[in-house]
Amino acid sequence: AQKITQTQPGMFVQEKEAVTLDCTYDTSDPSYGLFWYKQPSSGEMIFLIYQGSYDQQNATEGRYSLNFQKARKSANLVISASQLGDSAMYFCAMREGLNNNDMRFGAGTRLTVKP
Amino acid sequence: NAGVTQTPKFRILKIGQSMTLQCTQDMNHNYMYWYRQDPGMGLKLIYYSVGAGITDKGEVPNGYNVSRSTTEDFPLRLELAAPSQTSVYFCASSYRPEGGPLFFGPGTRLTVL
Image (cartoon, rainbow over all chains, first blue to last red; front, side, top):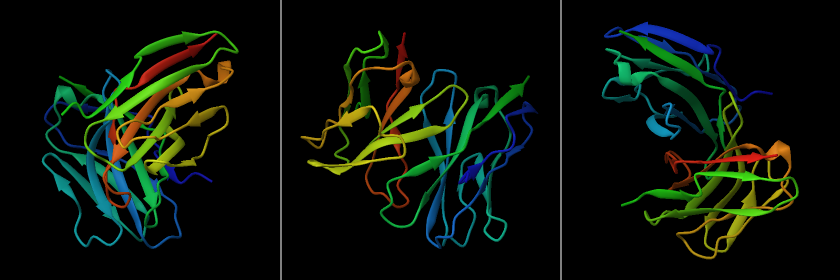
C-alpha cells in the first residue's frame, strides 16, 4: 500500500499568489516525521520543511508552511507569494517510528509558476 | 563544506558491466543512504548505513552492494548491470534518523544499454 500519496501530478500558479500542494500519508505508528523536498530542473533534492507527529503547531520556514491535519493524515505544503524560481518538482516524504531509516517518498507534484 | 558529493555525474554501462558509484560527505554524519529515482517517480531506498562498518538493506537492494569503511564514504556497487537499473542515484546523509532531514548529493544519472 502507498505510504505517501500526492494526487496532483502537476499544478500551475500565478506569480505572487499562494499555492497548496497536497500530501496524504498512511501509518499506524504514533511517532513519525513528515518532510517536503524541492527538486528543481537541475536535479538536486533540497529539504524545505519538517513536521513531527507530536508537534502541536504547524511548521513554517519562510514562505513555506505545512498544513498538518493529523486526524485526516494530511500534510499539505503551502507556498506563499510564489516566485518563478519555485517552479520545480515537490516531494512529500515520511519516516515512521523512531530510529527508522527508511524515508518513503511520494510520486511528486510538478509546480509551474506563471509570470 | 562541500556537503555530499557524488561521482560520476553521468555514466553509460553495457549490460553485464559493473561499476561503483562514489559518495562522500564532510558533515560528520553517521547516517548515510542510497536512493534511486526512476523517471516520474519518487525516491526508493536501496541501502543505508548507521555508521562505519554497519549497513542494511532498504526497499530495493537487489543488484547492489555497499560498504562503509569510514564515516565519510559510502560507495554503491552495481554488479552485472541490467537495463532495470537505469535510474538517477542519489546519496544522502543525516545527523539523526528521527526528525533529521536528509542532505542529498547532486545525483548520478546511470543508463544501462
